[in-house]
Image 1 (cartoon, one colour):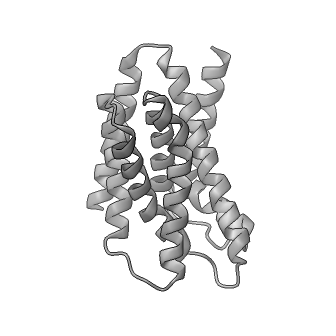
Image 2 (cartoon, helix red, strand yellow; image 1 turned 90 degrees about the vertical axis):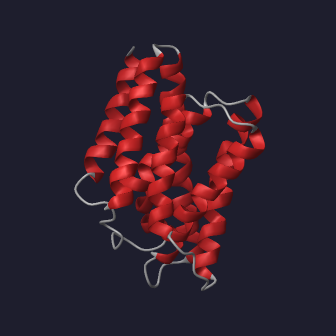
Length: 192
């Protein structure tokens, strides 16, 4: 029970710290620090990554174990697209829809085949990675920034996975309600 309380408190603190403004604090440092903070300071990024981790717990062993690779792969691909000067239409909509769909996946307890689930996660993360890449502060060291947002992304994914594993041992209603809340926030982000 102490572990559940700790995870819920940590999650609450992260969400509380980000609720005032979805993308504030990008000038909080350069390189590694900026990259590390970017996913943590955007409610949309925080929810999507944690929700994907939460959802992955109930997937096949292959999908569950490969989800962090799909997350990081999509993030790096999206950032590379931004850094390469290419455009990606509908980035903010894609990010909002990733939160909405991740919430729906949790609420419905949907189990997807590895190829479908991995492709969906990778596609979600391309939008997030593009946003991270395009919002890199001027003068930031690319490799340091990449390392920072990669570590933060994985940390959020594993926090979600930890919460999902704890919730797997309890009543499924909590997961369904949590998924519904995440989906509702995604819907609000999509129309905002």
